[in-house]
Image (cartoon, rainbow, N blue to C red; front, side, top):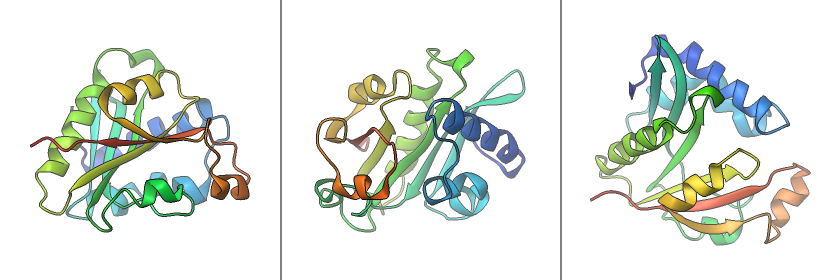
Length: 178
């Protein structure tokens, strides 16, 4: 497990695209997944952003990213957006593990690396993420690591309904390690 380099991006993108097609059931949607196409601009170039990868057998099999991006409403529920300080939120993205490598601690190790990275930046005061409840084990994994702020399977997010997307999003807050 390590911070990604430019030479890792094609394999990291493959892990990400395979996940949005296989686990989410709707595939690549440019309005939600544009960062996957330009990983360098979204994760490697900005000083306060990072992408981490886990390798097995010389292949990238898992990813996790940190971006300085405060959740906004819409598309996120107003209750979620109001919880975070504008410009001071580290958002975790693309915590994906290929199915044959799940349940081996890779996601946990990558999330720990992301949180350590965010904690090393003075800019960040909070950590946000959302997950699609249809991803096997995702809600349980994140519930062990943070607090549910909003569960769209239970509470209605009018902005998401207006978008017509089939998401079953659960929004979380995690603590920065101190």
